[in-house]
Length: 202
Image: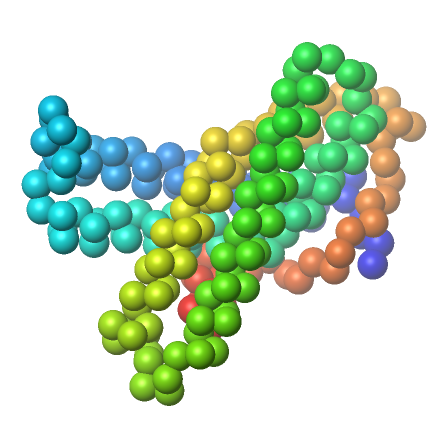
C-alpha cells in the first residue's frame, strides 16, 4: 500500500502530534516515579523501604507508560520509516548522523515492543479460561509483559524528539528533493491510547 506521507501531510502531522503527547506524558510519568523512588528508598543504599509497595508502584509506572504509548504503537514503524526516507534526502553531517543513530534506536525499540507483544499474546492464549483481568493468573504475566516493554518505551521517550528535528529539516529542503510517496506497510487508523491498551490485554 502506498501512502502519501510528505512532512506536511495531515496524517504525518497527526502521528507526530500523538508522539508529542507521549513524550510529554512519559516525562511526567518518569518524574513522578523518580520522586516516589527518592522518597521511598534509602538514600545511601537506594533500596526501597517496602519492596512490595515499591514493586506495585513500579508496575503502575510501566502500565501508565504503555497506555500513553498506545496511541503511537500502531504507526511507530511508519514514523521510523518516514524519518529514514527524510534522512536519505538530507546532506550528511554530524547532526544527521546522530539523528540516524537515534532513528535506529527507535526502530530497534519498536521491533522489541512488537516481540514483547507477540510473547504476551502467546502467554495469553495459554492461560486458563478462568484467568481474567483482575485475577492474579492474568495480572501477573501482564505486569511482567509491561515491565519487559518499559525499556523500549523509555527509548522512545529518550529519542523520539529526533523525529521532530528530522521533520523540521525535511520541510526546509526544496520540494523537488522531498519524497512525494513513501511505500510502507498498511497502517490502521490511529487508535486511542486506552484502545491500544485493551488490545494488548486481549
